[in-house]
Length: 114
Length: 283
Figure 1 (cartoon, chains in turn green, blue):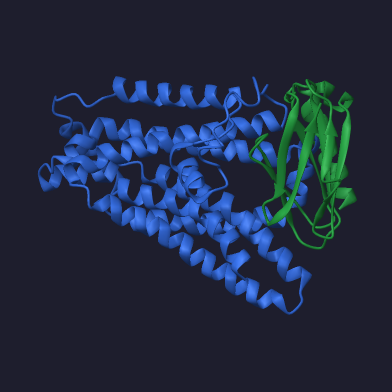
Figure 2: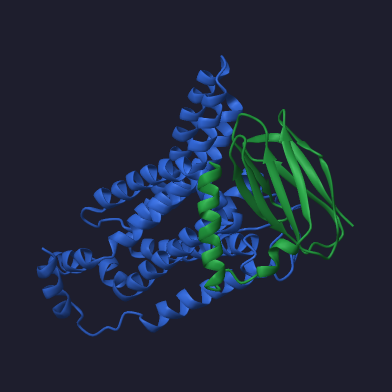
């Protein structure tokens, strides 16, 4: 898994060099980690700075597949068991934005933007 | 089991509606069943492959591979739907007018069925890969409930497909004279909605700016998570809290396909003579 990721990262770097992925500043964004554990998001209330783009990292520590999804900030992304994904969000206005696990719909949380 | 059924049903619903509309839009075309079944079968195969490589796709291109992949296939489907509609605006009237049998066969033979087959394949692939991942996750977790959940999943597939069949047979009750006009509108809205979803994925990948995250909020009237909201989302691209870039893509798709349909609209001059040799080549 790690080897394959490294290869793709290399490919990503090649794309970057070709200028195919414009926002090179993506890695300067603040990282915010959300973990899926025991069928729950940890934390369920995630503080996020307003008016700023952020990088959410969602880690799935459960043995079932999850889909991190939000109708409030339009994201949906599958998270494999034991895997992690990156989701860029924002800039968002102050407020509360719900997200959920589409494969376990009772599992919910909020981005608290302020 | 019920939870699994509902989750799988909601995934299958989208693909089911797309296939139902495409089937109605290609009513009376010879070999369309073969093409569309082929498209769906390729979609299932693709879904298994995509699910198998989900980890690799997700971590590709700096971790936004999944978004770029989704956006690409959605926008490919938009092009195919647009192409179909432009073709129909050129030849649809002759089909609907039920011209001489030979003339109809000629038109049917040149019809871009591969475009529709590809659209079905993409719809099945997108939703199917999520179902495969979901059910695989359950199977992997094992336990006594796994079997009942797989049964729930199977029922979900059946009910979702039934929804697709319902829209198909519903559309067939429309007189042939109006049917292709209606399906062209449905396909135009379908394309605009897919373009809007594709734009959301491109914004998620940080390739495009979102241009405002919630231009308006109608979730208090119709939530996208409700069944009605989801139906409207699939059919017209309804989004309760749309981002600016989604509106841009939605309107641009309507305008571009709409004006191409107008530009290439059927001219009453005899088209049939030019059509015949093409058919002969195809045979």
